[in-house]
Image 1: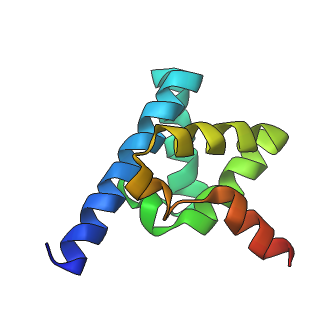
Image 2 (image 1 turned 180 degrees about the vertical axis):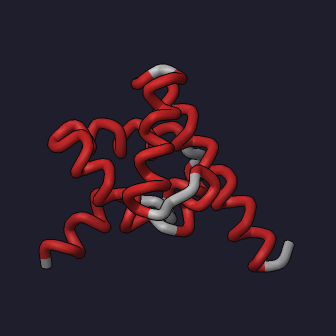
Length: 98
């Protein structure tokens, strides 16, 4: 498998995990409202989340405050170990603080 295909599959897995967790936590209607907000306020489409993780992380923190870490953890836990390694919200947050 080429590197591009691997990244594409990983991105799809991340986007799917995000969608599943948001729908589980918020319900379909509220998740749809959140996606609308992501697109209008952050220029992040539903299928672009894996490509724009930093902006997605900021949006979660803005919308949910301390609750963003719960959502982030649930997303990470729902990923297969292979995808999880490339999607560590906690590590991203620590790098921002350093």
